[in-house]
Image: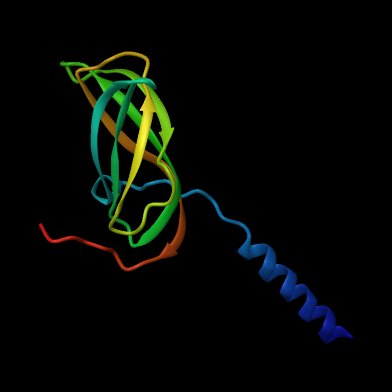
Length: 128
């Protein structure tokens, strides 16, 4: 009976531990792990910033939260907005995003605020 109870407790602990996951926050190395291709977009959805984030991590990631800063000619941040990348982003691949912004800026700067790891994958890099 004691062995059954111990086995039951270990099983519950394993199942409960497997279901808990926290969002990953990029570290100081993050600028080299993510690359952005973005531009101001003014269309049917209104003023925004559209583009792609390139995943340099060895994992497929999901729930990628972005921050887009509008920067003036002096390098001062004039506005910020947050948005999401559409779907999962495979290792070595890219994901599309569109973030609505309140006003136009000279340039835009994007950063990854958080993401969730899905699975380890072999990166898919294309020849230049």
